[in-house]
Image (spheres, rainbow, N blue to C red):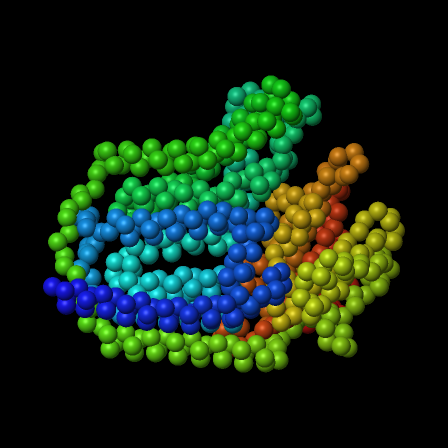
Length: 544
């Protein structure tokens, strides 16, 4: 008996020593080669890049600390409770094989994802790889028990990764909330005027703008995480847990409509001040509606369709993988060291890529935009701000002018070209800058300018400092490299990642933005944009 216990303890020690060796190698990879971008966070470390997102309010990932704490508690809970039961028909077994290969495959896959993320300058991909690697380490050290216990907590950490794609979903959620709230308010007999995502009373005694912070998207990730957590703690089958997550999204929409209706009714009764109070209170109300609805659904499902939990009699197989464990550790450590040498060499190479605009003699900036466009427009140089120079990588190129209509002097068309350097963070989604400059995006669409130039078209407004009147403007943008012209950020994102991974090219993408006042209508603004571009693009853009 004592020899058997000693043998198990020795086996456990050898497993954790092997896991520790792999963990050290993995931490070194993600610490020194976990982040290839230098646009906003100057670090090689994936760990610090990730934590910096939790510390930055603009990243909208401040809930990362909460997710981290919950993940740690879930791991402790799962290990403490063990897994002596399984759901009938789920295939869940305790007596899993002690093979080291699930752990080894997970760690190798994690290293591969980090390699791809580093080359494509996508730190988020590297984070996914790290979580997969971490699961492999715990599976190697603790066997199937630790592997099962850690699977959900590590996956839960994905909610702490910033996901900018939700900005697009947020815009449509805002539009949907405004549509529903307007219809309900008018159905209740309230005269309400709508302008884009703005709602205001005809007599002007209250107005409200459904901006991104009020659309529910900033809380949607946190709400989704908590909804999935409710499902995980109450159920063992994955389809039931997934159902709780899916319920969160329509409930989030309903919660935000309820918030808007509370604001409208309060403002109708007591003016702007009452509406602001309802806005603050109902911010918590959305959480109550969503999480309360998910919890009630879970209780109903447990009562009317309970799971059949039965004891699991599977036995744990003996640990016979000592020799293969040594091989697996050697493979993982060897690949980790090789990856670090490869990425260090890759980082030392001179940037190789294509460009789609004409450059100045020094090859850094796009060529200067013309001073005159025909006899109708004169261009004034628009200087790059010190903040832009400080925040963006030093090899970022700029060329911009503000074109004034000579005849009237009243209309202007702003043309800006930002050329990325080696780092892809030189350019980003234009919506980020516009919102930061005080513009509100009222709508989005597509447009093709003469010459077959595809563009994303944004309808924006900004409130005047004096008078408080809304100033409408049209914004068009697109991206150019040596191969193609694309209209959207996500098209550029995909092509850039493909070229980096498939061809080893870090193309210098040009981000072209055109902005025109639209006080006299969208058609007139588009005509002015086209007139200026007809004189600018022939000398600027190589590919059209």
